[in-house]
Image (cartoon, rainbow, N blue to C red; front, side, top):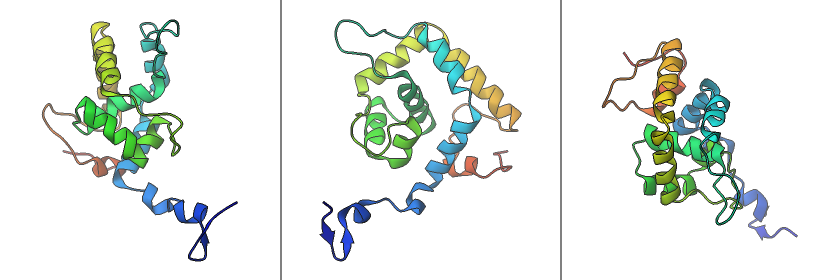
Length: 161
């Protein structure tokens, strides 16, 4: 049974307006989702990723890999990435977590261990080369130490010089 809030049901009141999901961040993440070979990277990482067994089950790889990128793109610490994945609608959608709280964001220790794992096995370097190649095919350039506004990437055909 839905509760009434000044003439609207609680479900209607809590609904996120579509315009709120079209932020520059959301547009950037949607473009990144389309542009990069996520499946290939997941397959490469799965060779080294912990398997379910004794102890705490490993966090699902797909959202963790995407949060790894969010962390880099927005220059976040592991803790800040955890916070962003907890409270950002756009980032939760990009990670495939949706708007429900059935799946918590990975904690900072999980992020740290994931980064170390892909660095140790050379996957981080392979992914960085793939990213550079994907961006080059789109006419984009990355320069070390430069942070571009995420909203720029969402505009097709307008790359940084």
